[in-house]
Length: 317
Ligand SMILES: Cc1ncc(C[n+]2csc(CCOP(=O)(O)OP(=O)(O)O)c2C)c(N)n1
Image (cartoon, rainbow, N blue to C red; front, side, top):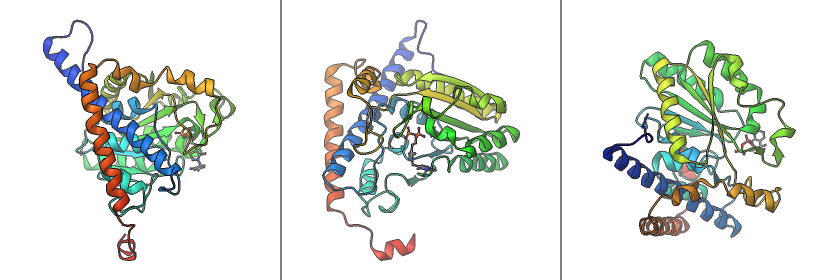
């Protein structure tokens, strides 16, 4: 784990600054791509649905960067654009995919919720992909690759029975899987207190799974905790449950936010993008933002001009 406190050496200070810059690039990219997606949806260029991770970028970036991208496997749900961009930075592939174009990472067939690239898989059925992560962890353990799997889930999904069956098998068979709960306190329009009895933080403990709980407003903190947890899962081949408390700043999907303006305004105090932006020099930040804005604009224009997949491509899938 990177130690960024207690009188850091000049090398550590440089590393921390470099990391902050990398994290800011990734988080700003995620935020801007998703703002563009909501605009494109409102203008009728996207059909189906779009769930954004606005406000949750520190969790996506902190966790994905703690993994070994060459072998670890990511499973996720309907709200995975941020994790996908942190994983592979394929802005063009994501925008093309969500616009249903053949330039998309899955030829425009998977859309926002069903994305696959290399070692990352997403699925929109709540909880449905959790046992897949456990199965993949079993496979990696048998093969002896040293890879771990991570599966992202939301607080609402903690109401699905299959999650608990997955906890049980992962613990019983001692599998290297990280259950990553992004607790934004709301499932579509249902606040957590109307859905769950007791505390979510401690749910996995009864299955003898080690657990921790953190806030997702500071990407450096999420990253250092995630590094520690990932090492633990890998080293001991044991599951871990990391509860990350985050704020959903956007609607559930598109424009369907049932929360009051006051509630959303108070959540903005915890905006992780704002927090990290304050730690960078203004000039550097503007330079970064300008380049990313141009890149996203170009990706949108390219996707606009691209074709939808033809029958031949669909038959090959
Ligand atoms: C089995 C199933 N039931 C219902 C839905 C519809 N649905 C999609 S997302 C969602 C809320 C999920 O809430 P949560 O797990 O807290 O994740 P968040 O949206 O907050 O990221 C619902 C009810 C679904 N996709 N799958």
